[in-house]
Length: 411
Image 1: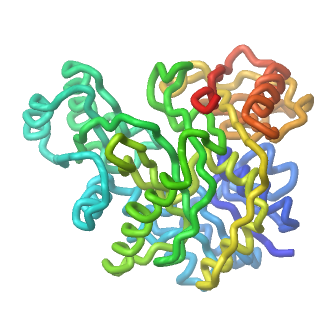
Image 2: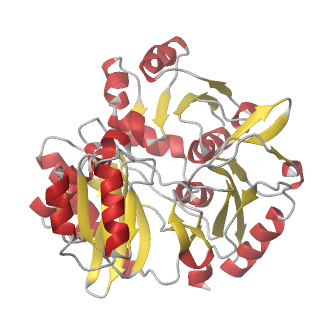
């Protein structure tokens, strides 16, 4: 039995910790997650204190969940102290940390993506935008908690959003440089791979639902639900994604002296003229990881340690269809209330991952944003959907909402 420290405390990290726990490891977590406290040790620590905490507690593996500590270089700091840490280096994490860097790498190495221009001057960006067709995509250069990508359907809306990003600091420093790119149409899917320098091991494909409301209405969010497998994405599409996108970008990173180790998430679009890249993330997607980890039969501990040690890995999957539905605080992704009590969680017979909850006086309460991810498995999508929505009905709260159409595209 080994000691595993999971950095981060959202739903993704709950799922990672739960997987390690089911494999028989002792769980430590940086950040407080009420559900993880039931089977592990949760502590709140500043990022720079994590390496010493890992040493003091004789941690065997550190698994970093969120993007911010990766972009800040936490992996490098852990490795300096000879601590086994899973995730990319600070340099490699630029693939997510900077949209401009990511697009420049794609352009340099001929990786298919949307046409774009990047700007750090508002007037130049404004003039370029005025000549574009609608809809158009605006991306803040830096990290923006999954909300830095805006699709505008009118010129008025696009100019307003550009001004908010570049002049009014909507995303703080993250939006002072922006990418303006063409809008791609097609079937969107997430291809996540375990990567060991130039070796790529694709995971099963999950589909996220980005918009806040049914029928893809509302604002872009961090994701309102996910499911797998997908009916409309073929093995050929996956192979194309690996061969034309993931393999070339990891080869490029290695060539540039920034070899990639960890999880590479390619957000892809199956267009009429082939697969194109929307974005790269350097960690598990959220909520995709929660459903993928429920499908993964292989040991996550063995996968992570073998990648760190430069050894081969093997991925085994069960045959279930898995679905996860997010319950978010009303108002999300904008201001959302905190503090409401959630009842009925003890009645559920399926995995529930805590994305944004807090324990107050022995009650589980809403801590804003995305709050819970309720998951279910079945022999097929119809069975899994029926199960997950039946289970959601057991949860009592007037302050949560959820989409009722997760997985509808594959029915």
